[in-house]
Image (cartoon, rainbow, N blue to C red):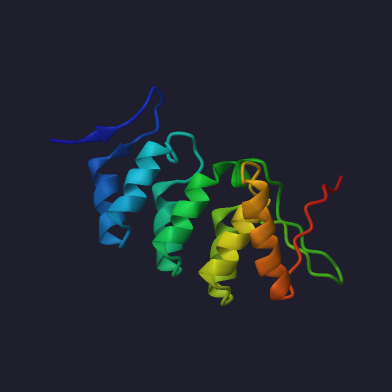
Length: 145
């Protein structure tokens, strides 16, 4: 018997996907959030994206924050590396994994996600800004042509 979790799209989680997520250490809470937020159906993330983030060492609460702030990734642009200031346009799961592999902590990654998310409250954004600023990190959200 195969379990299907889906909406009216061709993309859905099947029992094999759920097993893959569990075997790769993804918590039940994260899987439930993936289902509730329709992260797979809306093409926000793939099952492999979630597994890759988990294997890279991201904690479940960071993955959950990313899923909750889905507009953060959907509204972003391609990665652009600046000449002297080394700016990063942070858009994909691969970018997040690169930051994690470079030694950036989950707290910093979550703060970046919250600060850049369109639906974060002013208070959440302010707290994230202060946290990042205290570490010498400044997020520049200006749009470039």
